[in-house]
Length: 401
Image (cartoon, rainbow, N blue to C red; front, side):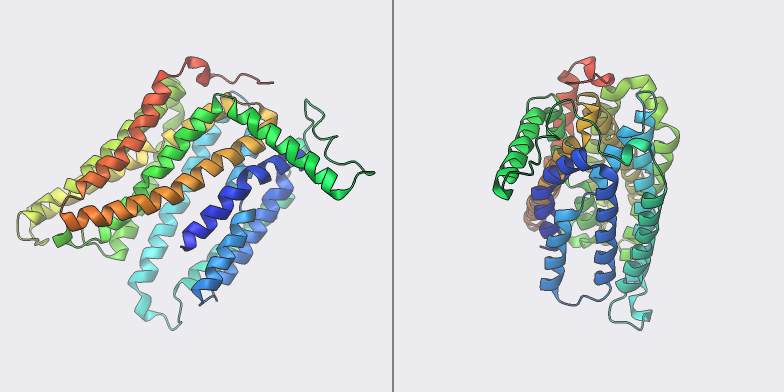
């Protein structure tokens, strides 16, 4: 419910905030979003009421546009030659931070009894708040580009039509909403919409949720029955592999396969790891659920390691998809484009998490958990097939007017 509150309000506001960034500039909205993230993390350390937590998440969702602004800014200060590489670096930095946060979270749960506080996550929340504060300072004082200090010029009269001093507030609001819907219609008429739908399908697959559920599920219920520390180590390994691959090899893979080929490769690797995961504890099932057998443990560890590696390398589809979306849209409209893209992501992520979670519980009870993994794997294969059927114009940016 807490995650749904954030996702629901983010879904409502993402395209609206993205449109505002195209008009008033992306840097101010980035600073505001980071400041709200800082306040949210500080509150996390002291909140004890679930209802209050849901309320904070609802409010935060309306202003949470950090990923939208960072991606749009990345497009603004990059060139056609280095944009794909920068998207790879951005995904690599996300993977590294995720690996570190997974390890710290696992350690906190593992040593929870040793903390003399009611909420052991308070330490982690305050530490994250300090890191966010550093991001606020950096984003405010480091001049990324001179164009970021002022709103970008538009090809139409949209910016001039936003406010008329002699008009009433309802009239100005009506003009603003009309221009907003016009921009949304522009996105809907472009090839980018199909790619944005592909992003939604990837989010719907809910791979991270399936890995987490399967890892904590007892052996007798066809899971791995791992501790929080071991789950944290798994995601740390995933993050480190993804970071290394994105940072070192992503540019070469794109150079060899192109954006379409890289995305298709990532889709098939991601689907494969989901199909391998449910059979990883197979030796435990055939040995009366005893995880102490050395050969069985080596088999399980090997399968998990292969699955984590495929999952990590398969993440190449995300920066490749970001680059293809940019290549099909106008560079000056990246605020609303990335906002609509985030709408697709948060909506499908929230709905997918609920459906996949329910299906997992149902198929575990019936003794056939592999079916939910097959179901989720299709949401990687379908986008790969969609991109395969699209033309080569996705590889090169074409200025759209």
